[in-house]
Every structure is written in structure tokens, then in C-alpha cells.
Amino acid sequence: MVEMLPDAVMQLLLDHATHQPRSLLALPAARRAALARGALRSLRLPAGTELAGEDLDRLGPLVGFLGQESVACVRPESLLPRLGDLQDTCLAAEAATELGRLLLSEQALGTC
Image (cartoon, rainbow, N blue to C red):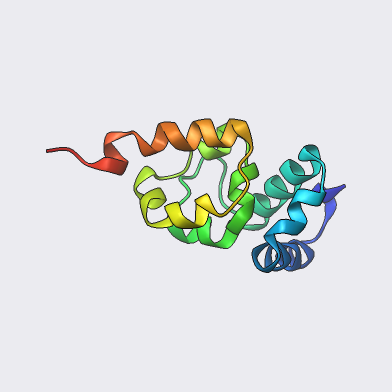
């Protein structure tokens, strides 16, 4: 059902989730994941596109509920400046594992 919501409604849901992130916790995990997929779709990014920092900012706390395939598209260097924001959100176990892997990559940490 979330997949059928127009982009304008998804934007309202994104705004609400950004301002009231605890309200997401009242939803079952499947609904949170569906909202994250819908929010990602509303960004109108081509499939497999890397998610830059601006995209993460637009997704807000829903980043923590993206599927593993979507999280794998996050640019590792975009995560470090947003660590504080991510710490303040509830992360699905799958997303947390993938985000952790990205944070340990050379692109995120740099090399000597």
C-alpha cells in the first residue's frame, strides 16, 4: 500500500518522520521498511545509484530501515559527518550491519 502513495504524501511522511522519529517505533518493522522503500522511491533516483549525503539527509531517520541492497549504495564518505544523526535513530539490524561495514571501508576512513 505504501508503494502506491503519491510522492507528495511520501514527502509529508518524510517530514513527519524527521520531526517525530520516535513515531516510527510505533510501527511494525515491516511497515518501517516499506516506508523507507517508499521514501527512497520518492527521491526518484535510478536503481543502483549511489546515495550521497544529501540523499541521506532527505531520508532522515528512515535510513535505518533501508534494506541491505539500498544501504550498500550509500557512499561511505557520506556516513562520517552523519554519525551523530545515525546514533540518534533506531537502526534495523540488517541496516546497522551494512552501515558498520561501510564505515570500516577505506572510502569512509581514508588511507595513510
